[in-house]
Image (tube, rainbow, N blue to C red):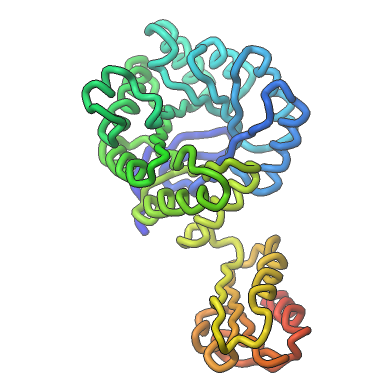
Length: 349
């Protein structure tokens, strides 16, 4: 798929936009006063592969999070700041990699200029974050509700406040809890500016529904080349957001340094515990970095043929199963040995 051409912006030890890979973000949900807990959660996210970590800076004391987290993880860090421009200045002085702030909410031009100047001096990008509950009164009055047009106008208004002071290392997010509104907002923003776009469905919900809404919203935009960073927002442990985000990227072919598992939904012909077997295969592949397609099929009659595009696969029978490769049967094995025999073949690839 052809990606939208966006501005390329340096972020710590990586880049956002342009030809850079799509980055997966998450956010700490430990109270900002709990430095030790925040550090541990940041380490957990980094270990899961999270590529950008954001955390709230609600007050001056929270600036003390920066140094210990930077020491603990080699991942770009984003300070999430609302209203108080002095916190943005403090975060910049302490080495933050990126700041999330809306310039229109921090006061007069002198304050906006102060933030823009220090971020420009230190090569710190700014993310403007607009959502359906944060629109300015004059924009709401104009459109009557948080329409996609209203949200994009709000985002570009905030961007203009920075542009006035010759600052354009800007990333934009335009989130809504309504998936259709979110999709239309990003599509419109993609037409109106070349800034990198951070995708997400805000307030998406608990794990199950949150993943479904995020997969639809984020996934549909990515398949049309829109999006430079993503976050799956869940009312759950942040590490689950990271796993879900990578699964979305895998599903649409944008993450290829890992196995891609396909498995059939089972039917009346299935004579083995295919559900349990597929889950075991998924678990065993969790740390595998090979770009291979693995099939777990329930029927030895149709399985190898239906999954002939798989690099390696298994198909269940009655107390036995087949190991196949690119649709060609390698051998028949006992049901209890299917998983281990599959993993042996994967090790050879």
